[in-house]
Image (cartoon, rainbow, N blue to C red; front, side):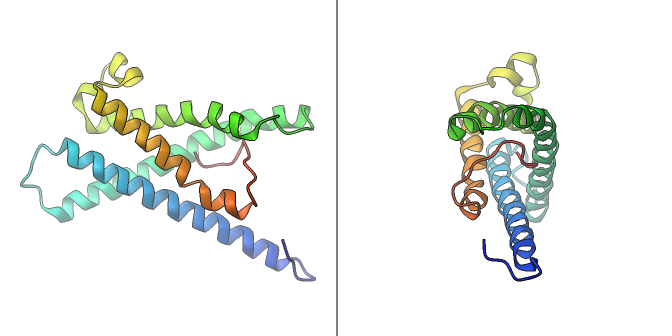
Length: 165
């Protein structure tokens, strides 16, 4: 990464990457929550403005969930990374093994808000229907796709312990 003599370009690049990452995540989560709301819409007469506000609120809540789980992953992986000076042999495998299950939990929490059928232990863990499971799985794909800008900014480096899930 090119840096000025005082190192400011590197700092700006990092801040820009973080801001882009957060905006992409928020937009993706809001869009997918809007899609989930469309499916769960029980009051078709709800004004579109209120509907959009609900989607924004759910997108923000999903972003906060991601931040919370991401911080937890950070604190759980830092000791592992400190003990093992070499990064996990397969970064993509580690990424999938950590982030996919965590994202299933995060999207399950959103599903509990959206769909009454998901508000049981089995509904939370396995999804209440094939459509619910598909919605969560696509949400995971969207979450992973939203990581692409930060992965590209880091020249293809995947890393555990980032603070957004």
